[in-house]
Image (cartoon, rainbow, N blue to C red):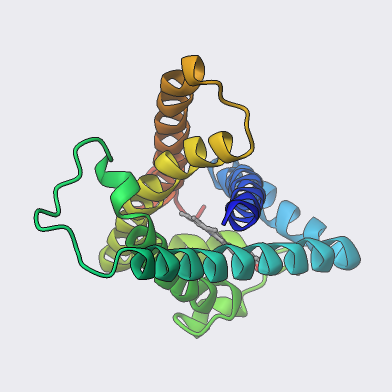
Length: 217
Ligand code: HEM
C-alpha cells in the first residue's frame, strides 16, 4: 500500500508540473495570435523532446489512474460492510470525492484531446493556418470558446480539477514526507490556494473569449 501511495504521489506531482507548463503555454493567448502560434510551432521543432514528455505524461496518467482504482478497490475490500452512518467527521469533501473528481476530470481530458489535439470536435478549425503558414492554434481555440456550451464545459471541468488537486497536493506532500504534523495545516492551505490559482487561470481563457477580451484581430 505504502509503495502504491508513493507512486501515486510521484505521478500526481509530475502531472501537476505538466499542468503548470501547459497553463504557461496557454496563457500566451492573452499576448495575441503571434505569441501563441509561435509557441505551438516551437513545440513542433523539438519533436523528440515533445514525444519524451508525451510518453512520460501518458505513463504518469496510466500509473496514477491504475493505482487509484486499485487502492480504492483494496480499501473497499478491507471494509466489506459500509459504515452504518457514512458521515466521516474530519475528511473534507475534496478528499472523499478524489476518485469521482479524478474520473470526471479524465472524461473532460478525453474530450479536450478530441477537441484541440485530434480536431474531431470542430474539424473546420483544426486545419487553419496563420499568415506565416503555421498551424493557427490561436484561432482554433478562440473560435471553439465562442461557443458558450463548450466554454461552460471547460469551466465546469476546472471545478473538478480544483476538487482533485486541492486535496491531492497535500496528500502527495504527506506521502512524500515533506510535511511534519506542525506544517500539515499550512500545506493543506497552500494546496487550496495553488489549486484555486491554477483552475482560475485555466478558466480565464474561455472566459476571456466569451467576454470579448480575447478576439480574432
Ligand atoms: C482552458 C483550458 C485549456 C486550453 C485553452 C488548452 C489548450 C490546448 C491546446 C491548444 C492543445 C493542442 C496543442 C497543439 O496541438 O498544438 C492542448 C493539448 C493538450 N492539453 Fe490542453 N488546454 C486547456 C486545459 C487543459 C487541462 C486542464 C489539461 C489537463 C491535464 C490539458 C491537457 C492537455 C493535453 C494532455 C494535451 C495534449 C498535448 C500533446 O499533444 O502533447 N489541457 N491543450
